[in-house]
Amino acid sequence: MSATASGLRLTNTLTRTKEDFSPIDASNVRMYVCGPTVYDFAHIGNARPVIVFDVLYRLLRHIYGADHVIYVRNITDVDDKINARALRDFGDDIAAGRLTLNEAIRKVTEKTADQFHKDVKALGCLPPTFEPRATEFVQPREDGRTDMIGLIQSLIERGHAYEAAGEVLFDTASMPDYGELSKRPLDEQQAGARIAVDTHKKNPQDFVLWKLSSPEEPGWESPWGQEAWTAAGWTGKPKGRPGWHIECSAMSSAYLGEIFDIHGGGLDLIFPHHENEIAQSRCAHGTSVMANYWMHNGFLQVEGQKMSKSLGNFFTIRELLETDSFGGREWPGEVLRLAMLMTHYREPIDFAVRKLEEAENTLRKWKRAADLASASAVEIPAEVIAALSDDLATYSAFQFLTQLAGDAIDGNESAAASLRAALEFLGFDVSAEVDKAAVDEAIAARLAFIAQKNWAEADRIRDELLGQGVQLKDGKDPATGERITTWEVKR
Image (cartoon, rainbow, N blue to C red; front, top):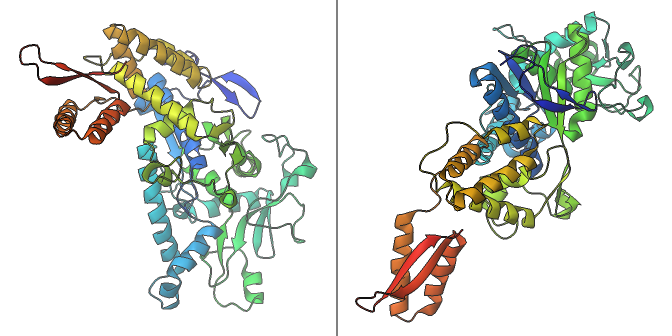
């Protein structure tokens, strides 16, 4: 596939326009997406970018070939909230010397990262090509891949960063077009995460690249901050930890190079995170861009309100999958996936029980229709690829799936096979919808209850099967006059 023949068009936040996608190298298409900060289990807001960019990843693999697309999604395990959680969960072990604080952090993040992997697998997402952890890219590496300390040193040497009060700060005034991504007026820009607006800054907009740690805080041996460390009465070499933004600059460069094709994430990351990533990466490498296409998914609300623990509408992916906390029941991962994709990725989404019910009913109809195929089609329908190639227009793709489902139910086996192929491509399970042996067993149990005149239990089984899309039909055997029950998949 040539760089200009794909037909793929994407909305680029950098230019605020929909553009033809032209990769730097069609044999090596590269995408980076900001992953979770694993201080706690991932919430449903985290699920949206994971699902959205999984669809894009699948589309890129289809267009350019699976071996020609590199997808990097990081795990952030350096964060002050993680530090606090480690102290909370393992404080006694740290105090007794059984664990260092950094070891405790690893324990905390391994647990939450493992749950994240289970969650995204349940959502039907492919694993990324690489999933680096921030802690692995702080110091110079044996393999020579980009590291955070090296990037910061390069920024200092190039005149884009300075040391003050034990910290290293990015000098926003040194970059004439700082703010190009968010297009926010300079007086509206605020300092980045992990640093307040302090007097040691040259400019209020300057943001932290490296922060001094105390002896009790997690940190790595630091090339900076010796004077502040000594002034605080601490002995030995200073320790520090990286700012949030420098982490993604290092990890993206480590696997994708100084300039790559697509950078994705949620709308909330445009400023300050992505803006500051661009500033660091461009200035450290001396490049005109960091990534050519910037893509952002819209915000998520829950039942019409901003998701918030104080409002009681904050839900983790695990809670939705494994508990009855939302709508009084557990929800299959593929239902959550479809519900997320029914709204265009750039639009805000209202995550509600009615939306999940709609997604579940739609998916059930599609899968019943796809189950009519004796085999999958070789090709994914061109109409589905064309819809997704128009800035991931999933709604248009889904309209075509509904059309295919109708044709399949009317007896068009080719439509059923195409539907099955499309569903599989989009990350939905296309295994047989109905377990015939289980249905026959349930019918036998129901007939036994009828014989006992236990109508409540008989009705319960009938209703459960109907909920699974199985319609029962009671009748009499013409020869014996005995009650018999047949069944069919409800269309």
